[in-house]
Image 1 (cartoon, one colour):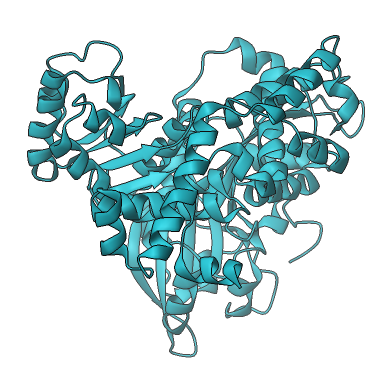
Image 2: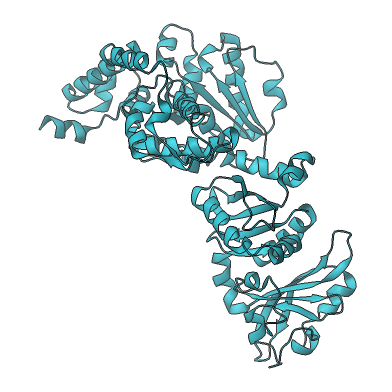
Length: 535
């Protein structure tokens, strides 16, 4: 193609690993990538030529005449090989026909392409649907960060800003590496252009990264003044979804919980989430819902310390009900939950129960239904406290920094190694919930231009008082911790005396075998480690 005629978006077209071209409303070729040029019968510059003359049998005029797309067409090339082709009309903002686009792939390439890209039919439908939704400049990248689509507004913006291609690549890479949304303003390359506001989110399907979408605004003030469009509502929903990728961990205890959560997401079995306050049980419940077949159904959270509405179980035909503080249910409410669980799978719904209490003790005190406990404990997931997740400290700290930047108006990139080591030594009684508040408080002490969170940002007038408090806590541990340590050592002792026989151990402890399995999993008790320690 003549360099004088090369459109400013030729860089985008060359990223398509398939046949791609666009023509105007008279069927004259406006743009084509190298895959299309290679099979053209004309060896001259094809720009401005009739598509039918260059590619006999392509029949773009039928799409222009009917103004309707042809998703599953066939095109025979000069060498006799067939190509599967999708053709769609292009419209401007006033629904005026401006041309046609054709996307195709050789039959023998379709299977290979399917592994790397969305289905051809889905791809073209997606393109048409997005064109009808977004008025702002936007672009879409595949799961490897390669831009495969940009609308007309984005292409026009590209012609005005020479810094956009580099920015485009950086934004998509950041989103896909972190799998988190980006929402920030980039300063202009020169004083000639205004600042550019960019909002981007990952595109997820069944918990897997499929790509990313970036939306651009040239004037941030105008964005803040205008009413949010339907596209921005979609972006908000995407970036607010909790997924298991948000719980990535280095510690074995947390990774075990994530693995169990993924198993739970594949069924409609009731789930019991246990763990201390502040361990993220509600967010974990959201992840189970969002990665299950119910992800497009209602997600309802009910605090059992409050009166449960009589209509709650009657009105939910599909979806997930989360019952927080399940131990607070009275006998009547426990019976209603039992009745609902009997029909739960038939109704296409699921209950997730959350508790920080000792349900076994509540059963012994006749405060909690043994029948309800038996059903809930079939799928029990224990979220470990922060003191058992020291290996995850760096991941957690940097995640909270990233999540808090937009809210606090900061641009902190990460915490220093010294900061992470300092936080590992600190006691957080409310676990990750307290850690998040602690991080946000420190971020407020940073200057706007600072990009690293340092130990000095955590210093305050009551530092010495807090250090003293932590020293006292180290010497005088909470009662619950002491009780759990005793329980673990006692179970290990009985397990050893029983000859590592679980059934006999449960009989000696006067508890059910299911309860024993839960406690052994909670305290990571196994025969091999005990024998190794004994040696």
